Image 1 (spheres, one colour):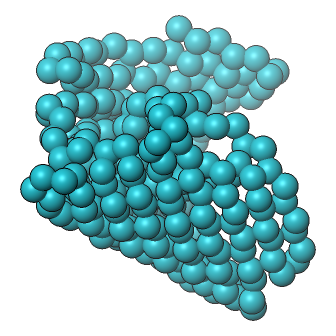
Image 2 (image 1 turned 30 degrees about the vertical axis):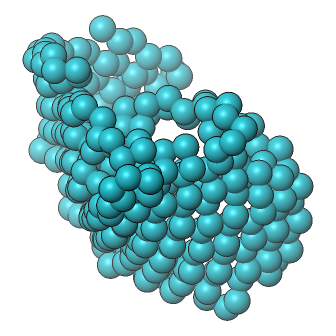
Length: 274
């Protein structure tokens, strides 16, 4: 079972497969899966081959949909990756999907690159484009979508920052279709053994979903969390005080909740929470 705030609950088959691995290549046959911006799973075959700094992989899977023996979801995926050892990593993924139950044929191309600077700076940039052909017998049409993401983390002079931004259009062929996500984690030490921190998790989803050419009713989802932290570390353990704000919206109902808490973690491998 796969479950997330973006994709809901999906009942996926258990993975039973045969796999053969060598230092240069790997091949698997059976009930397999992969994550290539969308979840690929079903009965099929996948393999990978390593050559110097390059890695090439492919997967083909098909599965029945919703217990209907007449409709399959079939995915074909290709991955090409470059590992530049210390600093630069690049990866490109291509997916072709045939969704018979919803009468949709989809194409997705995505790429991402990671670069490691000096002094613990890490930057990752990703982008993708997709098209979906809605092939029902009356009035077929095509929708296109895009996705963009940035991750950045740095630790310098005791200050640590980790951040991520994901922007996906409403029709982007992705498990994060229609998602706007911003995550920030900042920690600033201002005295010996004391620090201030701030965390923000902004997750909003407003996707356009079609089945047999018909658009599902709009369903906006939002779950935003903002948290301030004060932490103090001693020989006995760590004490953290944190006020927190929740801003949620589900099925048209919006709630705003404020609160706070206390966390104490001792050095004796036990902790206390309020």
